[in-house]
Picture 1: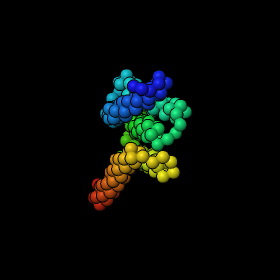
Picture 2: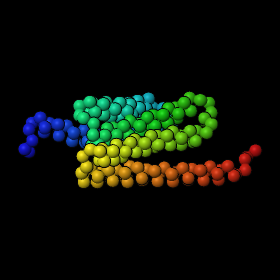
Picture 3: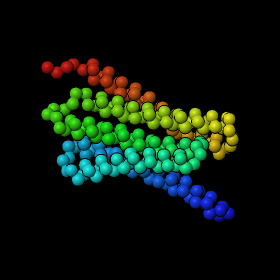
Picture 4: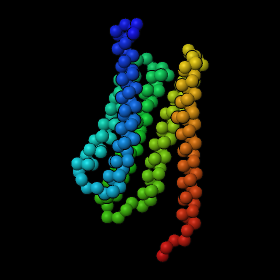
Length: 196
């Protein structure tokens, strides 16, 4: 409350940015299964497809625009990088969703199903998760570098530890577990006799 009007405006704009970023992340978590279900179910309602795809396009463009604006407005530091990376993750997730949706729509227009569609979707999801993991690793690396060379604080160190655990370590474990399960499933399927 003791802050001047300009400082208070900056602080409120950052809080608003955090709220909007969290809202956009929740929106992609809601839109993702709906859009993929539209493509997979072969629903022919143009209005439903338009709503789903336009929401995804909004979630692709708007977070990138917000990240660009706030990165030009404030000096880049660890806290700002966390906010910007959250926007980048939302855009990456939407790109994966739109790519899979496009594959479903291409398959719909063809006479017969695409060969190895399941494998293509798996690798699109895998590339998307790897990119998300790399963004999280970059944030941790930058935060560590800034803590070692710049201003160190308990708050920054605790955020860095939480970020490292939840966004790097748990993502790496989940991705590795998914890869091993996929490899085991492929091995079992390939061991089955081919139908004549």
